[in-house]
Amino acid sequence: MIEPITSMKNAFDLRGQNAIVTGGNRGIGFAIASALAQVGANVAILCRDTKKAEEALGELEAYGGQYESFYCDVTDLAGVRKAVADVYAVFGEIHILVNNAGVSTRTAFLDMDENLSEWYRVINTDLNGVVHMTYEVGKRMRDADKGGSIINITSLSGIVVHRDSPRSPYNASKAGINHFTRAMAVELGKYNIRANAIAPGYIRTGFTANPTEEFVRFVQSQQPMDRLGEGIEVGALAVFLASPAAAHLTGTIQVIDGGFSLS
Ligand code: NDP
Image (cartoon, rainbow, N blue to C red; front, side):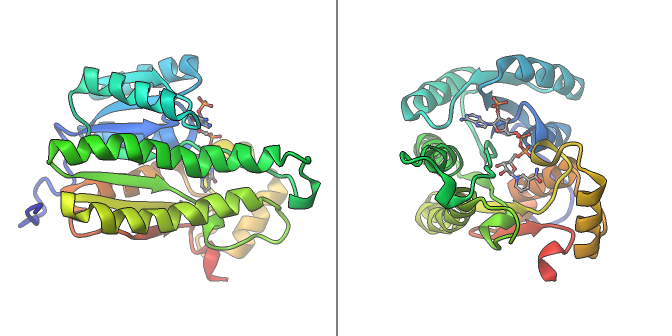
């Protein structure tokens, strides 16, 4: 059992905790890595673009912990196995796994090529990437017998389907991860491993970089908090889910969308 907090002192403190953030080299993943680092966690960034990872590590330096990057293509199970082994060789153990790496698509389902390449590209990254990471890290968390926190970055697109933006493999992946998260919460609870998801709406990074005025007006017209979200706000939610304050939360899907999905 993970002991419940008895005061707010250190309730959000992650000093001494080691975290993996997939896709932590940029966008929301980097914002999460940075947020975790700012409350004391050591962070391993797993991604493909190692040059971008070096820049990210340079920015984390200011927080005084241990930060390393490792090449990893989350679609490749053997590659994930090697990367996770390398992380453990450097960090000893991992307490927090953030499955953030993801890709999207704009291809309508019936316009896909006859091999359904776009379908498999997105599913293999967004859904199977999470599965690969959870399998490799989850087994090690179980064997270490110290519990753990798994945080999956899904999307509002796993809950609703936007009419004018066809992205069926993305919708299916994110919905799949939401329920995979609940399944892991149930299966891994006996090992004191918690699993939760964060479902962001429109966040000002990556997929939505340099939004057009029209896009911003559209978002503003749809949501009570009339702006795009910021990566650090997703990072703050990840810190909460990883922290002792959230020790009784598992199997939840945390929507952070400025109220977009209400209307
Ligand atoms: P970005 O496009 O900025 O970043 C995507 C990240 O995923 C990169 O770090 C990239 O690493 C990594 N990645 C992609 N494919 C792979 C792979 N095969 N193996 C390893 N890493 C990979 O996206 P965002 O920061 O915007 O999105 C991050 C997450 O947040 C995604 O899961 C996305 O679905 C989710 N999200 C984003 C929203 C938004 O508004 N931005 C809204 C809702 C959800 P590399 O540079 O090495 O390719």
